[in-house]
Image (cartoon, one colour):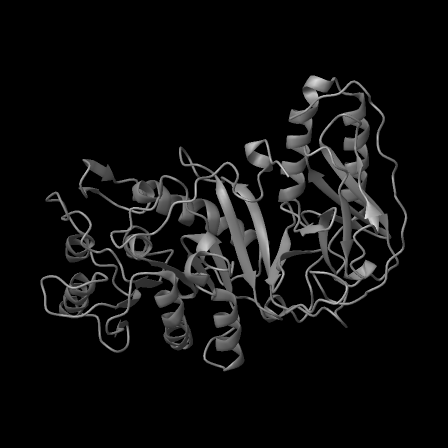
Length: 470
């Protein structure tokens, strides 16, 4: 499958895939035929089994017995029907732009993609392989030939599965199929992972945790590149609102179990902490990084061997505080005040989390930094570090969590150990009480990678839960 247009890329095709290091330097077709696809390909559904790999697969997200939340509307289907007619009538050269505009609007709609309305499910796929895809799911017993897709307009690489469904259709798992290859819908708003990889959801399942995705989000980004947001919604959380929110950087490493070192495994950690009663229901917003990660996550320039780099953290934290957060507050039942708004990251993500609380103390009242690269500014230059910024104007009232691996003696030590100890001592001198408003954790000898941060995530969540209760 080829995702050719940048907005169309649901799998990162137009974004670089920077990697983390100890210093954290990571970084359409046309056609003449204007015949539109028919309104429905038929095929009534039932709830089926909650599987994403095939008819005998077992999913971690069993939706049996869930209630249809009715997120879609007839208006969503009407907009699609009008789009299909307009696409058929458009000149071939104009179809790509028309499609991009419709998909972008559908992604930002209340329900997102796929489109759901009474008795109907409409899923769209941009595909240039030349092979006709199909759609299947637990409602079709994972039959790979259950619902063949058709081009919305012949010769244009946008395919549709427009399926008549029996109501109520419980939120169901589905995937696209090429031959015998199953793959998730890259445009699906709601999704999750199981032993067979990513699966897509027709709706938000009741009583089951899931993820909600917003591709190419750029509200308030200014000159920064738009990026994907993923909101983790724990089971039952929306009914328990208003909710605290944790904003996390390096979003691609947080939820996907195929991320480096298995990722942070944030979803299972949050679910376990809520189930244990140490964390109230909350939302986690994962914010993808871009190729400009080092620039965006650093408040000043430094030199790590190839000349000065960095220094765009003002733009990035303003984007999070003034663009992303208002969108989340408008679309989810949140508690918007600083006492319920946390920001968390690792390495340079830890640095920019502390900087976000410094620059926007009225927005972020809780901050977590794991293995924070807090020496930035004085690695190869002689600028201000985050420590000097806090000395000049400490964000009084903020709850702060710091940790690192590594070990003494100092100076030296791996995993930013020494500078985090220095930051801890500095905060105590500035009046932070430990334990209390300041939590410091040393994971003796721990390495600088996602596996280490995932291992410390439960401890952070327990400490965060106590802070939220306080």
